[in-house]
Image 1 (cartoon, one colour):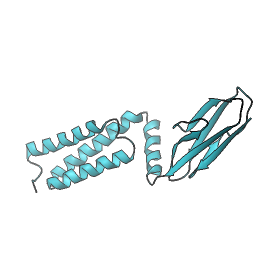
Image 2: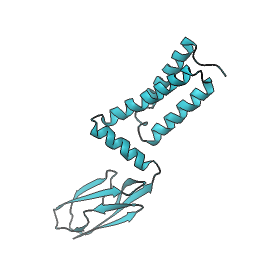
Image 3: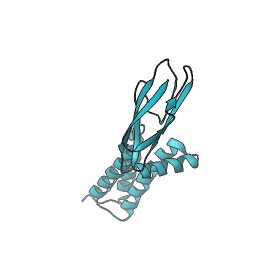
Image 4: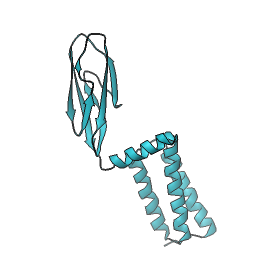
Length: 161
């Protein structure tokens, strides 16, 4: 039987073709430049780039959807670096939080106005969210950021303007 894959957006899929009933079918989605993989739909579905299923006694039609993302190359580079360094997702969480925390401290040392510090923290938070690090640790990042702000006020480093 035939496994057919339609592709929406910029990417490639390997593994389509002819299979016998009971075979293990593995489809692999590879996003193109500036694209991210959104998911599989059709006779089988999923969100991982690899879709594995047992071939039924009929042809299978699946659609792989890719979306354009201007941050995809940067996100992929960061993800690859975190994985190759052994830091993984937790490393991304800690790295993002530390960047926000130390940037906040830096702004306090140059006596930046409080509004500039808050705007910068929110911008860095949104940037981290765009990289996909935020959903599991929103509170963690803001707690570190506000601890940094509290430390600045306790030592008198930030102005109230």
